[in-house]
Image 1 (tube, protein in one colour):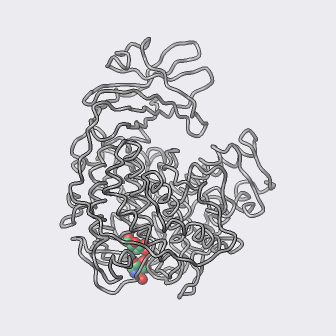
Image 2 (image 1 turned 180 degrees about the vertical axis):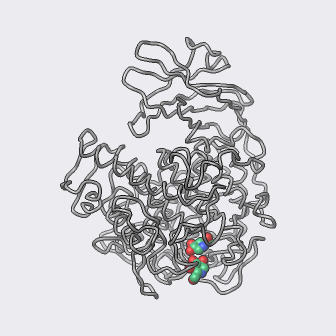
Image 3 (image 1 turned 135 degrees about the horizontal axis):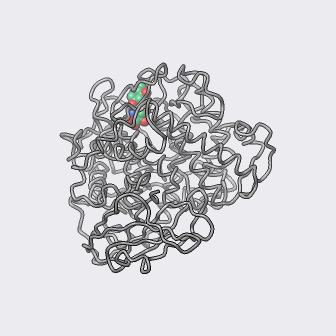
Length: 612
Ligand code: NOJ
Ligand code: NOJ
């Protein structure tokens, strides 16, 4: 378990928050560090722990923080980030929900705490308004004890409810597929429904952008609003509800298209503050609306591999090449530090860790999608992007078996990794991730231990490993209406009744465990799992269980098998390679260990990497 170990790292222990990072891995960080893979392996548990430390009430950096609230950072002065932002919290919990679904079952109680805390905040009157007409949902941040923040601020910010709906919808869909629809109907749906109502009613009203500075329309906000309405509609259908607000989705999509300005996405429109529209918010909007089920590189929803999204990636990332001295001399097609936008002066206006990782994540998402589709297209719009990797490339569609495809995708993988290599370079020896790193020398600056930086690390690494988030039904929501209109749907708002702790579910007695192992094999080889219990053949390779390669892809060499085991079973296991000659070879390293937990989950995924 090397690269993917963070997903299952905490699956065996009982006290989640008592887990600490591997102290002996610290030496790997910093400028003298080893390979990027080594850095990622050691940084992954640190990033997860960095998030947990910032969540109340038990997080070590969250003293005095109410249950389920996330502080943006423990830094209390210059800048004071010891508050809870709806945006940062939702992006963080979306990453945790995805890690939970990918196998870290211990995260469940924390997710329930988040759901409970958000139910309280929704009903709280605040300077943006209250719940009676939904306006209070646009409040960007709250005090850590769960009371309203009353000082002047850039409010409202209309991305928060959409991001929160997305996080709780992802959890709800897992609950439904694990037989807990009644929990969704009673607890999570009322919260989601308020947020969807807010989007349907106010999507066409001006908003402060995610940087809390510009009043107008922001690509990021519109993109995440559209996504939430589409997946909200699908969830409503699954539980027999009707989402009136979701009927606005086609109009929001129409408006989304208007951010395209011919060669890149305009970060803002209708803004009160004239500055470059080349903005990191576009790349963030793209990665947070990626749908791995999209059948093609869809331009209407700006999928990561679409022409428009690739052209935008180049324009935005190139815009930072000349503004920061640490980027000087780095050639095109090689990663640079990415900040919020060119003219930014906030806390020195430096590159951001989460921005630099977002640039990598879009490329990992695109690589995943091309690989799945089996081809990539170079169009007049995306030509300049591809020319950074192959100056002579011509427009056209290149199938996965062509040399051009291989040349381009290997270069783009290296390009994505070069952004992560900068993160490696500018991460201090203790693995902590701040908000910014100095434009002059890469020293960490501004807020320390930024929760969002850690969450951005987890999502970028998951994308790099091909562990993609669930679909949001992009194919059902990608058709704009023939005529665009700034319509609205007046919403209904009801105070959610979620109480803590959330009602218990039935603990499972049998759990279907899917063992996934990344293992690059050659034709004729097979992979088995062997272990010290009967179901795994009692260490006898003749009785080992064969894994399937039906989902095997060169980039993501996945072998898997699902085995039902009784809750409480403790066992040791290893993967075994069967050579072309029929001989069995156990993977290297110590035995892997696992305890089957009788939680609510009927299905659990384990992600491993074959140890050589
Ligand atoms: C605080 C906000 O969090 C930050 O994004 C903004 O740049 C500054 N205020 C200045 O408006
Ligand atoms: C400032 C950022 O601009 C904003 O997006 C974020 O929500 C806050 N800091 C808190 O991290």
